[in-house]
Length: 566
Image (cartoon, rainbow, N blue to C red; front, side, top):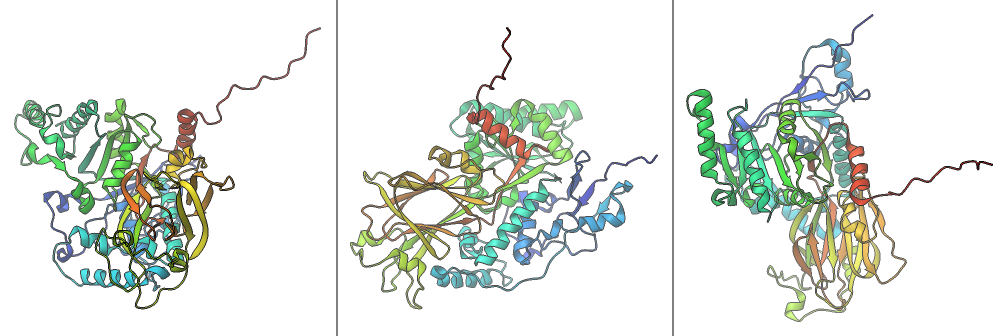
C-alpha cells in the first residue's frame, strides 16, 4: 500500500525590479528589505485544488514596473501590460507539476512568465482627444526620466478603464475574474515586514485596541521585526500614548535580551501614515489590518485609490459583511496569516469619472466653472447626441474632472433640490433610457447589501461580474432594477433641459454636483480590492452573513402532517 505524501510548498519569488532610474522618492520604508518572496501553499484538504497556477522556474519573471506594486497587483499589471487574457503568473501549473510530481515532497521554485504584447486602440468616441493626451503624458514619463513622480502625474499616467475599447475592457475584467478564482484556491504566504493599522474613525474606544495590536506586533516575542504604521493622529493621542508604548517595549526588550532592540530602534519601527502616503506610496505597506466595521473597510478602499495591499478586517463594528475575523483571536489570526499564508478574494471596484460639459466654441472652462455659472446654458444642445454621436475634430464637448475608485456604490441623486432628478442612462455608445426619480444607485456586487438593497435592488454574490443599477423612488412603477455586465461603460448624465442639478457621491464620500450637461462614467476598475478571507469559506461566509445580518429567508419551519389518533 502506497502512502500519500502531502503536497509540498511552492515558493514564488517576488518579481525583479527595474533599475533605479525609475524609482520614486521615498522613505527608508521602501528599501529592498521590504521586497520579499512569496510562498504559494496548496490546501491538502481541498480535493479539487487547482494545479494550473504556476510555471517552471525557467520562465521569464513578471516585469515589476515600479515599487508601487504589491504581488497581487503585479500579477494584474502583467496581464495588462502584456495584453494577455489570462493570469500568466498562475498558468500551466498542471503541466509543470505533472513532471515534477507534487507528492514527491520536494520544493518547486517557480517564477511567473510573460506573454506577448498585443496592439489595440484605446478610446470611447466621446473621449478620443483626452486619450491621446493621456498617452502622450504616459510616454513622457517612461522615457527614462528619473525625476520624482508627482501625485498628479501618477493620476494621469494610468490609462483609465473608461478609455478602453470593448475588447480591452472585456479582457481586463476576464483577467481579474480568472485571477480571483485561482487566488481563492491557494494560500499566498507573503513575507510581511510593514503592517498598516487602520482604526474606525470617531470611536475612541478602539484606540486601546489599536495600541494593543501595535504592541503585540512590536513585541520582542515576534520572530520578525515588524514596522507598524498607525494614523498620524495617534502620535499626539493621549489614549494611544506612543511615548509610553515605546518605553514599555524597551523594558520588554531589556528583560528578554539584556539590551535594546539591536540596530533598529523602536522609534523607527513605529511610524505614522497620512492620506497622501496611502494614495501616492502604497508600496510602503505589505499588509493592512482594519479595526472596525464595514465602513472602516470602505475607508481603506478610499485611502488606497489605486493599488490596495491585502486587507484583513477584524469585526469591531455593527454589521460586518466585510469583517470576517474575531478581534478576540487577533494574535492567533495574525500569527497564522503571516506564517501559513492567506486566501485572497479580489472584490470588484468601480472607476467613476466626472465629466464636465464645455462651451461649444472649443474654449476650455477653468476647474470648477460650468455652463450654468456663466449663464450660457444652451437648451438646443442634446446630451444624447453628444454622447452617442461622434465629436467634431475641433470640438470637445466634455472634459474629465476627477476619478474615484469605489468598492460599494455610486449614487446620483437630487441632493438638496425639492424636485425629482432627471437623468439619462447610456451603456457604451448606446442610449438606454431617461429616468425621473429621486436618484440612481449603481452598485458593485459587494455593495448589493447596502444602499442598493434598501432601494429595492437584488442581493448579489460578490464574485459575480456585474453592475447593479437600481432607481431610488422612480416616478414610473415599471422601472425595475437591472443587472448589467461589468464589461460595459455606463454613463449617467444630467440633460441640458433638466430643471435642476443632480449630485453624485462615491462610497458616500466626495459629494459632487452634476450640472445640466455633466455626466459620470462608471466602469469596472483596473484595481480590485484584495480582501483576506477565511480559508475555504468564501460562499459560506456570504450566505451566513445575509442570513445572520439581514435575516434572509428566516422563518419558523413548517410542521409536518400527522395522522389523527382515533
